[in-house]
Length: 143
Ligand SMILES: [Zn+2]
Image 1 (cartoon, rainbow, N blue to C red):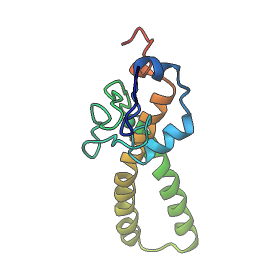
Image 2: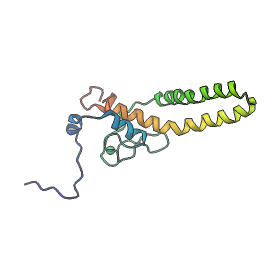
Image 3: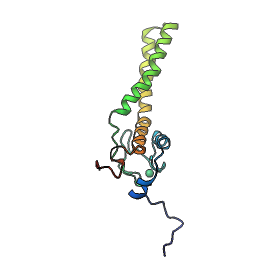
Image 4: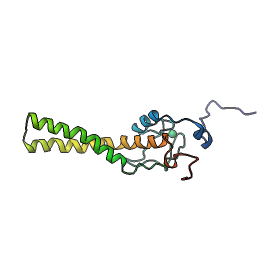
């Protein structure tokens, strides 16, 4: 007879993982927070932009992710859509000195890009996991 200890953790097996539905929004939100898209508790990053090899809580293998340059492109799109309209609006309405504008826009662009890179990369990996892209599909011949 099998007994289950009160301290037993949920055991994730490739079979149970492949059968389970993966919610895109949950995985995206967990990735944006830098958490494992599967359990939401383990850390996704071991350094600023380095994805860990696996989740320390549920053991999910992260080596299958292929975020590549997408997070950087998305950050450029997001920050560009904030800075460019703001710069155009301020120039049209107030026309401050160019040196003053550069002293504000350049640091803002740099800081906003650095702040967004990790969450966006986490979100991309979360989406890849939820959609079973690349090696995140246990039944994939890619694996
Ligand atoms: Zn996990």
